[in-house]
Length: 90
Figure 1: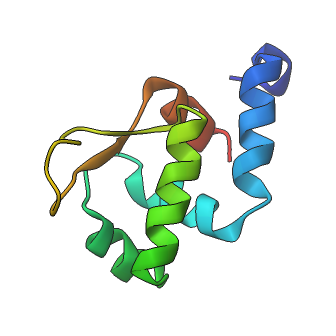
Figure 2: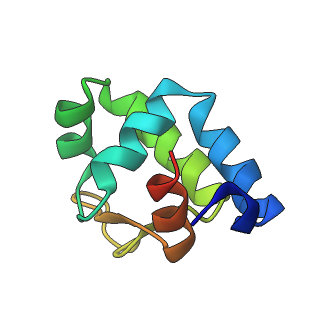
């Protein structure tokens, strides 16, 4: 998809992700997979509490979703369809 084909909403979300190295790392780490926060923390070299905040920010923009929000430990996260479009254009 070229830049001219992307909607303003997607371009805004790309910008939102790119202005934070943590959001960028987490989005790239989730590309093509489902992970728990501790896996993301290890892969991205980010403290777990920062991972939690970053995931909340990304969920607020509908870029990431939690598959099993009812569990307290071992929550699984993945990119939404919109998140997949954004990460392909980073």
